Length: 374
Image (cartoon, rainbow, N blue to C red; front, side):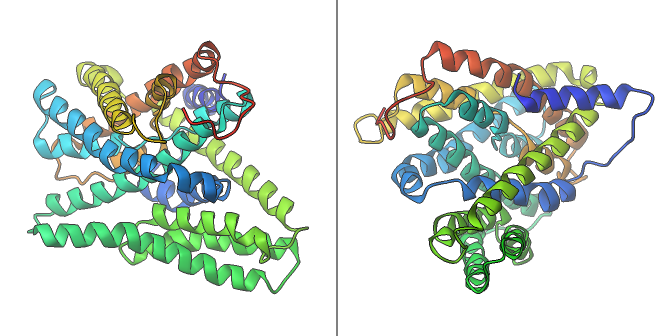
């Protein structure tokens, strides 16, 4: 069993026990506390050469894929569940953000082919940022701001590229300081400042904290270990961030399980069923249609890879954070929160638990050749 599924189940059992302690789960907690270390640690492990090689594919999967998946879900929830277009659009955008934490854990345990792991993880990091940007634009619509096309384009560009610039600037400054010490405790502290500092600075400036933490993590992971961070400090830094990500994930999924236990899912069973089906259809439409574009290129994706990419699109922290941030003037806000928890639970327990046997069935484990073009 992937440990994330076990943690969610444990959280639900704890919430139903007499000794349960009620802890808040808010957008601020997820975004400002849990998300920066998760994004930073994942980016820290990404090798720039592999990331750059797959970037055309992952960028299209993230940007166009979020648009396709969100459109399918929004239209379906409007026509099938009777939601307003605004409420359906909010749900479509937030549920398009994938969080394949448990899948990546299974990938590492089963030694899945490296190209597949790179595509799934980097696409997830990028589409988290894209979903957050789309959500911010919908917030402006909900607040009755008169958005002009040029203003929307400018806002989108600053949110994405501004986030990358802020993350690179913060990480660059941190690496200059790190180069003046060989104390591994100071180096760990500086990378911690880079993770939260880049995220919070970007959010303060109206840019994307997700893209900022992604840029900072990649800069530290690919340039920092070339001299700024000492050779003796490197294993300490990597070990710290591996444990930090595990600890944060553990706390987050236990909280998710605790809140899942108190969600009145039965009240919205039809909407939840529709949402689960539409989420899978939207993800499939995005993955298969986009991968078809790259069929005749060097970035061609095999059918087995496509099936894994589609099924590994679990929902998690970002979707929950955005659901909790839906403004109160959206009529379906309560339903959106409940249905989002339901979709997250389905993805963790159904998709997450079935991924390891599917990987074995499709013989994608323990590949000998790296970088194989599928």
